[in-house]
Length: 462
Ligand code: FAD
Ligand code: SF4
Ligand code: SF4
Image (tube, rainbow, N blue to C red):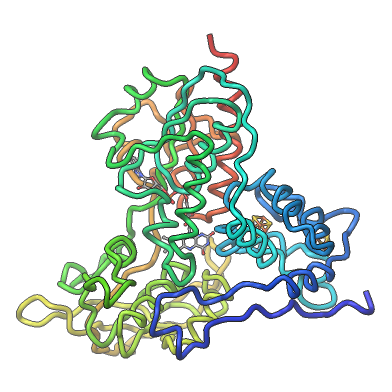
């Protein structure tokens, strides 16, 4: 391993001072020369540990070898064997804990930049124009997919490739789920999501919008019309702090804040009017990817100060390291070891302040992280105009609530086996609705497994 470059090749980025004034993507991607040089760092390990870290088991050394030889089209084919939406996973996958987390090169320095290489190939293919893969002969079987997030899109794409007729039912007027209304433009351009959805449609998948399954039509009705049904309705139910003042004007859930910005195109200011008045000081509570997205979005909407308020320390933050780094570079102010006690409003019911209490860390709790303990008499009031609660989401409750025979877990998640089979025959589920809020690639992996199981089910069904 003597002559291998120890660190990843850097990816160019918009400088922080420039990027906080726009919603354009922050990392700019590798060029051909850098991608080839990075691919040449790969040792082509015989035991391929990186593949074990990828939930959809992409042949990572295989596609990297093709990049190293300049065969970008072949590299794209290898990725697409396992992953229908690589331009998305190459951007938002927590690869540091997955494929790259297992890379042998970590023993001497940084892993191969697998995520960046995957993104490079997906973007290269986008520029060239994507080829639609061959489909199996039509089977005559009809499948309904509920929800067009990564779980639903992946499941639908795979089933269409197997020759089934697939219809997606989506509650909103646009496809993509969190990819579209949650993750901001500066991390995942909407054009990328739209292109990936177009690809799924080219496979023959039909998407019906503005249909809330469980309300507009029931799952039972879908089961009568289709040979099998897959539920991928995600985890969009916000968790609240349950403290006084949470209903004041100016307090948002992360979900509402990001949906307004992404769906109502506040990020396209001044072309579109911003539908959110955030004022000068914004506080986001929580420290996961969602919280970083909110705090960074607030800055781009014109906030002079954007705080992250978190009850533990940076070490315990659940957000990806890259997102924390980007937030710090952009001037997000981290107020750590602090938790809110109450929101305080003015006489018109408009948010004015948050009262927080300082914390210290005790022994590890059930999550394995050290438990935060309040320090008596350490309260502090902070002037804020907007508060965003980003402390997690629970599974969407509508379908589980309307189906009494469907087995659900403590948090309202649909219980499935490892292939997405629920307690009701012919009904499958996967992604955040089954696991609780997780990741894009896990949702895609669940969609893939369910597609295989559904294919088997409908072929044997009389
Ligand atoms: P979703 O993406 O939630 O899609 C569910 C779809 O179902 C939606 O389109 C919804 O409108 C539709 N739906 C819901 N109910 C119904 C109904 N009754 N009828 C019809 N349609 C319905 N993960 C990462 O890996 N990396 C990241 O960087 C990352 N950042 C994130 C940032 C934010 C702001 C958020 C909110 C999440 C982030 N995640 C990230 C998590 C990731 O986006 C989710 O785990 C993933 O999108 C789950 O996919 P899904 O298909 O299960 O559900
Ligand atoms: Fe790594 Fe995610 Fe790509 Fe798999 S899909 S190779 S985990 S970046
Ligand atoms: Fe290449 Fe790293 Fe995978 Fe080895 S573990 S094959 S070096 S990407």
